[in-house]
Length: 80
Image (cartoon, rainbow, N blue to C red; front, side, top):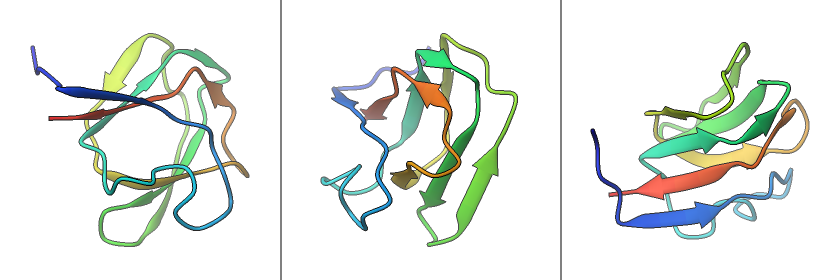
């Protein structure tokens, strides 16, 4: 299992840089909600994820979590 040294509570926002103020994350934990997530990845591309399962860690690099298009709740950013 991957170990993470930082756990950062994430509040989705459509304002640039507001949801992940300390740079890209290594992974995202989804604590609840509908299982949809709209993010800006580490290359600057907007990605939409659907069918995400509550209680799961997803290992993708994320710069921002957008409010519009995100139904997931209890989002925690993880850094190594």
